[in-house]
Image (cartoon, rainbow, N blue to C red; front, side, top):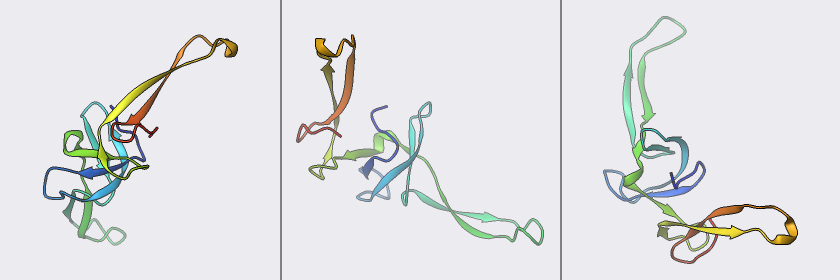
Length: 110
């Protein structure tokens, strides 16, 4: 998944279109994310004794990854995620590659 916890995203499709928020939780297998302040529903709870009163609470439900777009922290535009592979120098004596995420619009590291 190209999105990570803590990224700022913009909702592109749905009733919350245009809202921005940070990713709180990622459900990788289901392809969904939970964004703070987005996709909020009401839940009616029945009273379960004196210490747990009933009432109406707000529940944040997960959103499909296809309905959001990443907002670049540098250029503050909605963008797609690209990848760049940085090769280690011979001087470091580390055989391997490092893969980083980049903004497709401004080519800065996300």
